Image: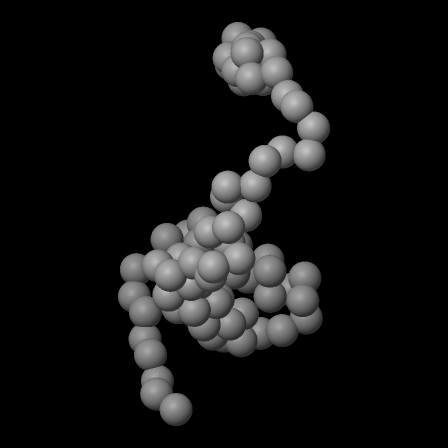
Length: 80
């Protein structure tokens, strides 16, 4: 196993790791180790999607939808 020292971690990132570690009942070190592992494996997964993921992109919706209505709702959210 390698030892890794990470300097200049932003305070908000440290607090997020500390909070998640406390919620899960593990050390900050364990939480950081698992976050690094998830990030490393997620990066390679993002580069090469599975055939199932690619096929799902082309699936026709189960029921019709009103694209204009959805677009109008999205624009109206920012106006509130």
